[in-house]
Image (cartoon, rainbow, N blue to C red):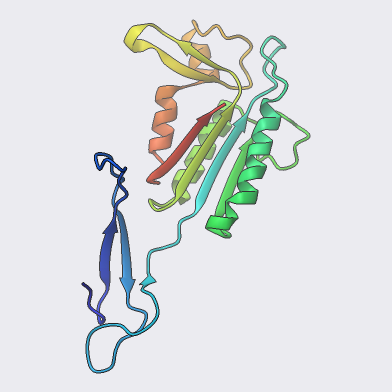
Length: 203
């Protein structure tokens, strides 16, 4: 039921087949496309959504060239570049011109990257998205490179190793804090972005 002369609200949820799993409510504002003569109701046309169109924000990170040579990888930069290119090709089919992709990697010859994939650049990229993104938007995060589990029992965490690290040995807390991104930090950076739909890929 709706009124033709005022703003209406509907909420949409998606359930799995069994009915025990449901999505968050998607709130939509709408007005009828046209009103019937002499009163309430609509005639012809569909309801017009007044909800702002969502944008897609992508943060794509690859690290092939680490400090020294022990950790160097062959394809992490290329994988990140190709994933970024794929997002830029496909996402406009859904989001039109509202697609914003940031690529960070260690390939100095890559002309489409925004910056190098050191820890400070990655953190700043998250902060820049957090300033612009809205709840209705979508966030896609992609990491390609080395990841290490470090710690024992409840203190164990996953760490993404950034370009300035030379070894997988994370026993030095200064090394961890300066050159690796912990799962706790990553969670904090993601949660600072106000979007409701988030995808994280660790390659």
